[in-house]
Amino acid sequence: MTKNIGIMGCGWLGLPLAKEFIEKGYTVHGTTTSSSKLNILQDEGITPFTVRLSETGIEGDIKGFLSNIKTLIINVPPKLRGKQTESFVEKMKFLMAEIKKSEVSHILFVSSTAVYGNAEGEITEASPTQPATESGKQLLESENLLANEEGFNTTIIRFGGLIGPDRHPVTMLSGRENLTNGNHPINLIHLNDCIHLMSTILEQGYWGEVFNGVYPHHPKKQVYYFEEAQKRGLPAPSYKTASIKKEGKMVLSKNFLDKGHLFTASIIS
Image (tube, rainbow, N blue to C red; front, side):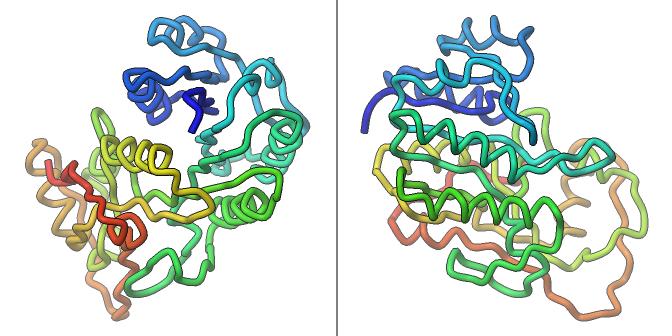
């Protein structure tokens, strides 16, 4: 695999991922939507580009960003909450049109376990996709667009909830009351394991595949978040007593583990 890669979206996940690849000797092109962050990327050794995707087109030097790279990581979250929503699928169509004009031959697309919707029980990469949210639906449609394109080879990663330095769902849940699904299992992954999974896929050449990215430890939400809140000195969230016996979904990273790889960054603080 060529040592030139592009990372579309150098934010909370993309920036440390880029730094990891640079340490391994890769040349990294990276995008930000804010020109004020160009210096931050440059200081880390990334060749920076300001690129903004929208449902009406692409602003910025997308051709420059895609030039001389064979592998592209698409790490762009759908912004589908609140009033400022736009079509994520349309953004991906514009991006794909530009990719087709470039030398990019391999794509790693960051998706979400939201594509499994409200499924119950153990979920693997082979489980049916039945998204229940607009975000999940558009991610799945984007997955299919990329996977079915013959001009390049796409691997999809479906991450669970992301945690890491300065980021943990308990801070948003703290003190909230009457939350539902307290008996459902958690499906989380630490930033370090996100990077480990993605760099392993690139270095091992696992193309044309689907990977779940979830740490293999699934305590119940009400237990896990109570303990995590206590460790931080935060008020714990409280959950309703479940009257409906739904078990929730437990997402297994079967593909990655079956290949003999391990996750190493615990989700327990």
